[in-house]
Image (cartoon, rainbow, N blue to C red; front, side):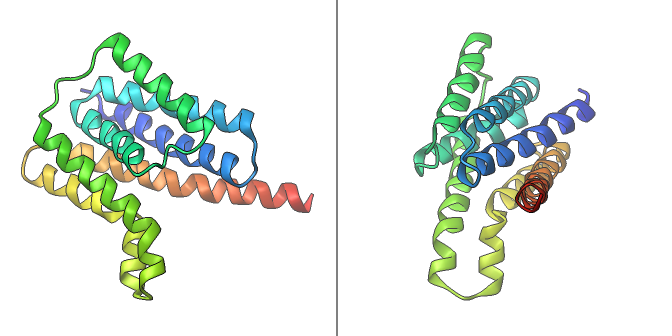
Length: 181
């Protein structure tokens, strides 16, 4: 298994995911948000098909976001359709239901906490914990420590998260230059 390829897929997926969301939510650019959403779907489903640990991560993020109604734009719907179409055409990886449920609950906790905690408390630690969605990071780390996941899955997920944050920085700089220029 080539973890460099897996890491690249995670990095691209995280970047495309956030960039697509910002294009849709901030710039209201439907065409490019759909384009980057499709790129996200392709990189995510490729990682899902390439590595079982990635399958748990990306499928749980997809299901968790769907459950908490975060699939809220046409760019998300098209990305979801592309992801599912490829997954169904190639074949769904063989996953253990209990591990998948643990990951789904982590994804749901992150999304609910991300939306609710800032409105409920001024606690800086809790706000940062849920702003950067640490539940899933901790769960994936614990699954790796327990031998359920390979430690490289955790490393790749951290790279996904870093590129997600990086995409926001790139987006903000690009938009700031466009507004000023």
